[in-house]
Image (tube, rainbow, N blue to C red):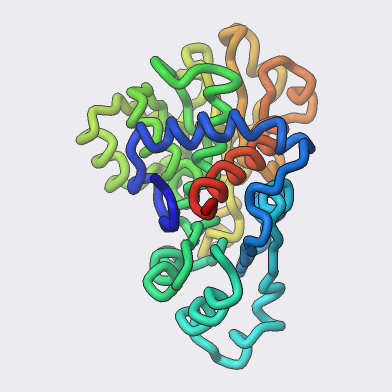
Length: 304
């Protein structure tokens, strides 16, 4: 189904395709935890990260190596031919000759789709500016499936909904599962109108609020995002909304016992460390789930 296919946006996936990826991830979880495998022996994955990344880069690398494959790394853009003026298209053509697939993270929205136009091998979008981050969404869906439930889900997406590519991709995917979505943000960081319009046309029930207290007792999952300083063209604008949401133990009084709190990480001050030890916190397990999910994608794309 995914053999030799690009992974650029969640809008390119059907619910049936997502379900198959999640089921494959579950079957590979023992290997993600250390069981040996040579499924991708002889395959090479190129890692091209033009923005800082810890979890996405390392989980892709772990996933490939756990399956018996190898990785090559672009390193910093300053140390590559890009510093000499080489275009992204030419770099992709060259790297595509060395590897069986390319993972790219880039600060410019649309860069992954541009890379796919010139790549002779599958491209996996690991985040393009404020655009999309489909593999993060797949691991988020896997986390929800493992820790809560995907059907009849009530979820609040909280924080930076304007620049947050993770919530953009997740909102589209959740619409395939009939979720009720609460959008919680400061007025200046609202979800883009185009996405809200798309969700409404897909039949998704969406409600926008700025006060988390209005919805926190109603939801099954609280998905909190960082207010991203690096996305703001004006530091003054960032300072106006920084620390808009910071979850503490007191905020969890009266919530559903089965409430699960997720965060794509890194966090700054969105969640108090005192929340970490509660049964609601799943964000560190969420980070681990990136390995089996990316193993599933690589297996389905690259296996002979």
